[in-house]
Length: 343
Image (cartoon, rainbow, N blue to C red; front, side):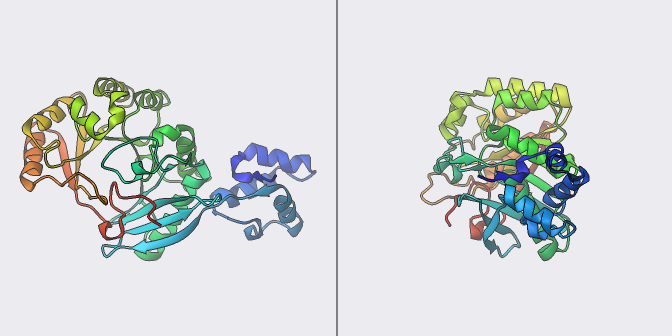
């Protein structure tokens, strides 16, 4: 069985060529084709001899993704249904604004968690994505950004399908490639990893001194409420999450972003707002209030504008940065919580 060549690091590629009487430099060339130039077949590696390309084809395979279907929203948002080498499909999204474009990428096929308001959570977790499959989503969206928006991709958020911290090693390996000068050369400050809150892994990220941004999908700072909408909260209660986030801030000094949807009759009362303020107070924080995007047959409804304004007023009174994020791509089911592989 042929080996996936992108599972090898540069040293292993160099050793492969040396063991066959060629120069180590040949491994450097192949590595550049795989990561900087995004080659999906050995035939594309035009500065290698035909014999070298045949040798690679004999021993290796490039398990690349393919954009199976692309949908464009009236607001310019693009959703890709991405087919993996084994036929499974994930979705990723390009979100454009006048000044920047953001890639929303997936980290798992399906999801490990059970959030009741999210369409992806209805799919069982089939497998983790490999680092190169995550990387390929970014490359594909960067090409679309250049083609349709006339600008390179500027930001990346791990807010697509799956819980990134349940695929920790592959997510970090992908980010390493994305930020490397031998990869896409993007600044880690332009990358945000969004988690539903896995305390042990948040501490691990802090210990490893990662440079990217952290966002937490919070939605309630009251345990009973959060458990009712995110049942895994019973395993990772808010006290443990808060302690892990305090540790994160002590190590990184980076502001934490909280993703927060307000639902009618769920978390739209003053007690919910006050609990959120108390939860946020230990460090500089930003709260993104997110417009809810209904999913088929879902039980949740968007809160009233009055409730949203109450959140904004109270957070600002306590000097907590707050923004309201209006949804993009709703007409193609590309908005937050809607990625569900309908294709």
